[in-house]
Length: 62
Image (cartoon, rainbow, N blue to C red):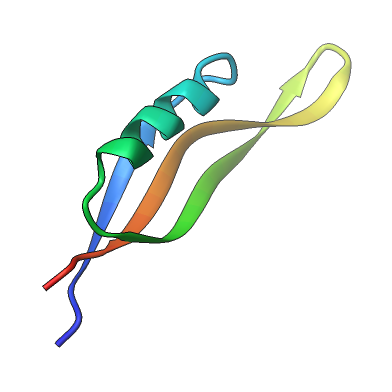
């Protein structure tokens, strides 16, 4: 039986890369997917999108 774990990392646009890199280097299992939660936002210049957290799917080594 395969086991998986889903992790959530809260991020901002200016620290996303550093947080993801640090988290991935601490994992023991295999990373299957990194899924961003993209939220549409409306600013003065028009519509844009923002990533507020990442989901990381990890396959647990048995």
